[in-house]
Length: 350
Image 1: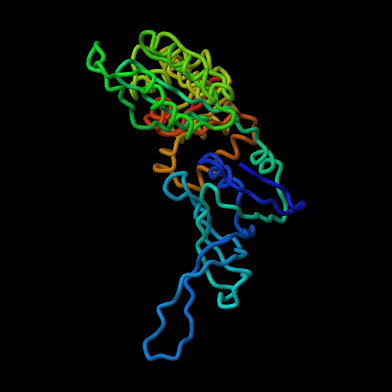
Image 2: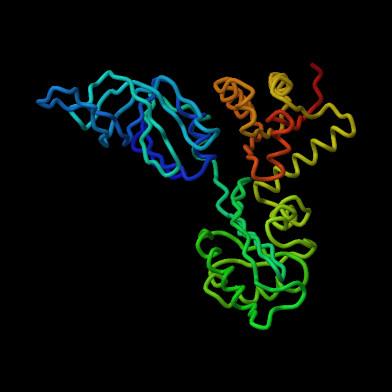
């Protein structure tokens, strides 16, 4: 998230990912003021019998926040409020307006006072390193980009080989060039490249990439032990011990280890973990939570404001909080367990 404090009360924001919007949902409160560009239907007075249907125009408004909610899980923020000011004289002050904030939208947020938690949330260090994952064999290649716990997978690329024997006109370097094109389009500045799959094809691709421009600007490594190429290979890798070893400081590795530990404690019938919202709330009231995972599933089964207030309460008590989504196996596991789970510092009995 790009942010800059204008003065002690006002800060400008540009959210860059879904996690940023969720953070802003936890920061923005009733009676805050948001200044942003938006569109509004404006009716112009014209000398004709039929009433004017109006024209949608681009305007900038200052909106006094009355309600805020996540729209379509965590992809957009919907802000309802009253217009305090606008740059268009045809827009009446005091009228209601709904503002949609999306990834890439710039706006300014003003508060009467910023709490310590709110400042900590917006200044929380972002995991800057992403990973470009490539699962390749002689027949197909899967490409995915992992940022945090969000995995975006591109359509498979096929080599044109036939079974174990290449066609007479098949050139593996052309296959590698076909892979290089989408990789170059989605890779980000600080991403690392991880190549895996059965056989020696991954090492040949590593050599090909190392000699290209992408290899001069990004760290590239190969991983053994993943015996599938294509999209299946990507998913297998994100669940593997190899992922946890080479991405030990990544958000996904940390989340996966927490999920593994929860399942281990469940099998041992330990009481030092929680599953589900009510059980986790009770543990938080006891001050027992060490680490907490939640997915967008929790917003489907619980009232949104209650969840947001709860997450802020947990963070205020010093626990580590990680949001996950269903693009990875860890996110699916959290969703299947009620959308929220936690590791406890000590056992509690409800």
